[in-house]
Image (cartoon, rainbow over all chains, first blue to last red; front, top):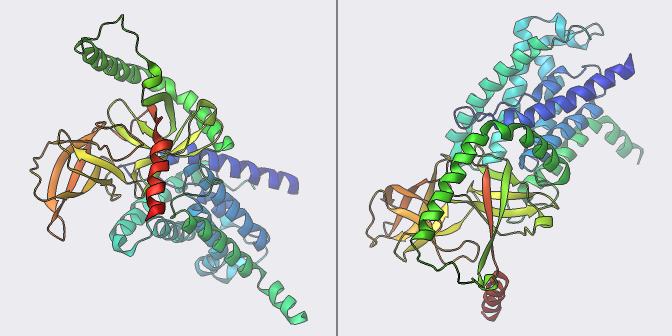
Amino acid sequence: MTSSYYYINFIRFALLVLVQVLVFNRLNFFGFINPMVYILFLYWYPIKENRVVFIFIGFLLGLSIDFFSDTMALHAASTVTIAYLRPTIMRFVFGVNYEFQSFKLSNTTRVQQITFLTLLIVAHHVIFFTLEIFSLSNLLLILKKVIFTGIATLILCLLFGSLFSVKKE
Amino acid sequence: MQQIINFIIRYKTSLLYLLLLLISLGFTIDSHSYHRSKFFNSSNRISGSIYNTADGITRYFNLDEENKKLVEENKKLRSLLYNLNIDDTIRLDTTKFEFTSISGRIIKNSYASPNNYLTINRGTNHGIKQDMGVITAKGILGIIEHTSKNYASVQSILNSKSNINAKIKNTNYFGSLVWDGRSYNQVKLEDIPRLVPLLVGDTIVTGAMSSIFPEDIPIGTIKKFDLNVSKSFYSIDVELFNDMTNVKNVYIIYNKNRPEILELETKIANDQ
């Protein structure tokens, strides 16, 4: 049981990185929209796991994306931040419920799931594009990129989410 | 001592987060200097070979178009050659050539971020070194930034750190070509003095100031020009000849005299 658990997460990690790098980084929808679907890994990752391990895996995930896309450690900085913030966001979205043993992501309502995902994406994109553009004079450009890429990421993540449902686990 | 250990254990997640965040910020800020870390670029062996495999799968889909482009270029070169009136029997001394070129393919393109880097399937094994120029049949593309054995990353002209010497064709007025990060088919030419007569549609080519590119490699045409804030220089919008979203076959240019030129230039810098 536990070994297959790690196995699934490992395969998910590798597949999401490859899909992100080979497909979504080349999309350039409207010339600038590259959805970042690999955030789904942090959304799907088991809740009960050790936080230290989770933050570390988040860092590795970002770093492996950076490895391919010549972005230095921009993805790593944003993923490590949302990995750290995830429990806070979950407490905000699901209330105290999420600390119970029986809590499962698939048992929550659709609205809660989408809110949770949206908050993760917004936090990630704000950090990513602020660091990438790195100047306050381009605030509008940052905002434009956060909003449009965010919407594209959200839609694709929801589609992927319904394609590969987590119910079985 | 006990308390320090307790403190560390209690806040271990926050401390780990801060540590990892600082590491990644360190890498990122380090990248704003001219030479980036050797480790984090897509020209390394692992990502290079993955991109190469992916390119091997997709390259067949646009073979037709690429062939047309190459034939088009051949046609242009042929017509140049026929009008040169060189006797074919004369042997050219290739050792006297100042510039040599190496062909290559782009295996990873990027144009949507403020700092774009491309990856090509040529590396030190093929004689690629840092600071060689990269062009296509239509115009300039960028400068080699990092190399591994079989791959190299190219700093695109669509990069906020890019700064290339350019001039208006058939004149000697030169300026520097930069990118403001807004549109992938447009770059800016700065520092052209206001007394220069300009027209929309004038051609911009590379200048003779740099030892990276040969002179007169096409870049683009003037789309719009305005005086800048100080009212003494033009700020010119240049529309690129290259469609940066669709580039495949490239040439890497190497200036044989570059080491000599650089040596001279450092001498001058040392004297001052």
